[in-house]
Image (cartoon, rainbow, N blue to C red; front, side):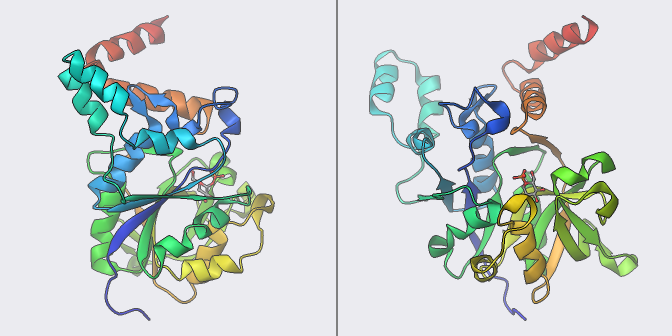
Length: 298
Ligand code: G1P
């Protein structure tokens, strides 16, 4: 049993995937860099992590993902040009994307062996610290960032916490799904105790309709489990399987966050995200809603 609650300073963002469901757009542009209104999808997820107090981000990348590293670096020529043209507002936005040297790491997942394997690739950088995982395909629009909500819960219960959300039963086979415990004591506000979890179950075998959404706070011991984790659903090394094992020896909670999630790895989910973030955008929110209304009536 663990005693003190370990601080969460690092977050792992797996960005090695090909983005096959939105090809050919992702042939030369990493899917995480596709724009949602005026910034790459990835920027929203990094901002969510930073708002939650994350100090160091570990990207698990692959070949053809160099644009991600460049995005968070200084672009001298661009900045000089904006200075010369007196475009101060845009310059400030460009500068805000630059992270301080040493606060981001990039490791490569050399083969597409699954999410569990991708996370394991970050083990040396995570060391013996508790850490967060944010799947950048998933954007979560909420007043308080999803990871911030989870951190607040973590600071009271510690252990491992995963974000979950109810989905129509016809969709459970696309996700990791939890088996919530029943009874009054199993629930404390947004926290739910679990008896298990399963990756991509057939609808008939799903233990509930609560899907795992793509935000996790985990203890570093998950890396020891992942080291020996056999391939599971889809022939891939699954994070869900490793978490199910870790659950036998460590406290684990599911957390029902407040917010709306969008799966930018799919065409429709990406489109929904663009609409949702455009509607909330300070500059174009009003007219964007009018455009959407016009299409709705078209
Ligand atoms: C991954 C996880 C799954 C989770 C999902 C959320 O699946 O393995 O447990 O529910 O992300 O989007 P993937 O979408 O990579 O197939």
